[in-house]
Picture 1: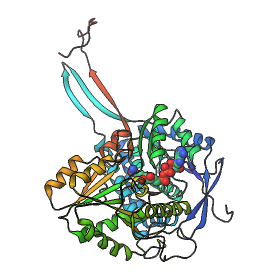
Picture 2 (picture 1 turned 90 degrees about the horizontal axis):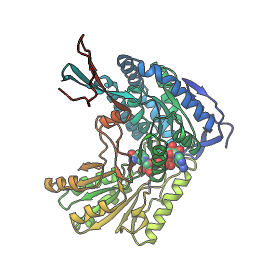
Picture 3 (picture 1 turned 135 degrees about the vertical axis):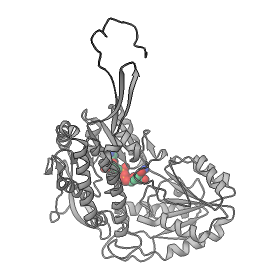
Length: 500
Ligand code: NAD
């Protein structure tokens, strides 16, 4: 731990607060290996302070008119749009992804803010006049209260923005617990909210690790939890949160397959496989990690993939590289270990990312693009989420086998098919067990006004992120039945009310 680097603060009740952390973690620039900041590891007391701020801000925020709330969102949107480059630089400095990729992340988060700007329309309820004689019925959706958002390292800005714009627009207050590996973006966003005029306490940032998460999961004042991260922690958060009476959506890990049928354009497929497999160094929950080559497609496809992957420049994300480093030294070691295990298990190592040169200074956590052919479903490189730049090609005989292979796996986030056969694409979309399907689209991340979410071990809970499901998650229903009886319309009636 270095004393010469800045120490981040918690952001509670509208400003920076030192708090009483249990300790500090190092924040590292993965391209150089250098420690750039210290992040407080929030204590139970810090969590209580953040939750108390969110609780105190809720009554006034929920009563704030939709017009005022949506105007605050519009101001936040304008500020974010104007200063998005600043945020992209912060992301690159702590996550490592190349600047253009970081800018893309911010742009996708901005889309959710834009969606949430329309909250008056999104919260419009339903009204029925004269449902029974002289009785009117109105259905409303109301905010929940203080909600927690717990996010992973791989999208320091976009994943929090899948949730907080809608949560806030709908009248909730928020405690964001960002990944301790990439904490600075959260404070930057908090400052932006302040500039946009959001009242203090509506958006709070609680830095920390398991202690902070557990405090949120056990707090009686947190009404709902939106989590994104690895499958074991997603399951833990879902089980602990729901056992404590909370509404929970917990998005987990993934292993996304891309099926290639013999009629596909293999040059286009190779471009897409390389882009989707190695973008963000494979540290995307929607990255393609398995190419399922049907028939004899692999013989022509694998060389095309390898040729393209060899041209990628891996290095410091602030330079004009295609791919940055992995997030930590531990991630680099883990991914390198999988590459060794894949070769040992008998897969053909077509391109080895452990070798090669990297365009960077210092001790960055680099692994270059890696391609395996002849991968079998029993190998660890197939069964496990590697979360690195490792693309596996599995060869199958038939289209039916390809679908069976995907559906037998434990994850169900994204799945894609590449073909010119509309009927096959339609069958794939209908039969594949994945929450998000791409037809000639390798990374089918839904736009903000549709909803994002997987199946099986990729999502615990039943509600996806953003779009109408996001609005639903951050609100609860109320139905008001109204009558204004006139004189003489009273009288006793102990029977169950009937509609007349
Ligand atoms: P992670 O599970 O290690 O951490 C996620 C969050 O949980 C962090 O805020 C972390 O501080 C917290 N956490 C970690 N360990 C904890 C514990 N024992 N108890 C309580 N909280 C804990 O995930 P990560 O490594 O930051 O992110 C990568 C993972 O996230 C990958 O598995 C990836 O697939 C997944 N992911 C999924 C999606 C999706 O939409 N399904 C999106 C992005 C990332």
